[in-house]
Image (cartoon, rainbow, N blue to C red; front, side):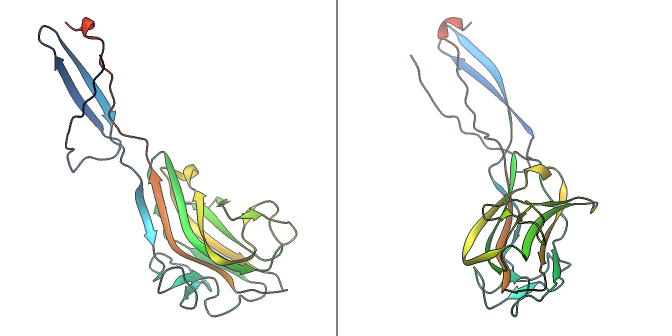
Length: 227
């Protein structure tokens, strides 16, 4: 015979992620009894560790020509843009830097934001880089909507944005390589001396960490094994 039940419990509000939780289970059917100690690791569900609706520049200490655009945004009142008042210029090298962000130790981490762009295809480009806290390693992040660089002016085969994406898209970039580390986010627009476009816009940026399942499931032995 198989039966299932649920046992309610309340965790200490001060419990920290990765802390061990110990359960003592005792079952009796009259003449026989059985007991076991269950140990689980507390891992909460998705946790938002960084969020910026892009309505101010507080999280971005270095902006170059980047700034807030009131003309185009995903959610009011503004979005971040490399050239908020018009087209980007020729021979531009505009860098936007975030504050230092600590990525929690977890099973996975994801950078998400909404984006739209108008960038000369195969020449000008925007990249999103993860930069280590020592400022020694710059790693271009690959997203759902990036494409490999064409070479010549663009970095060959590196993930980047170019061409035109008029409607807003929900971009996702893995930060799994940076779990337990601190990084800067760098958005950089580079252009040659040819055609210029309206540039790159992004809004509602978030970093979320994901942990393993913390459900409690245990199978009891057959009653004949009880003593």
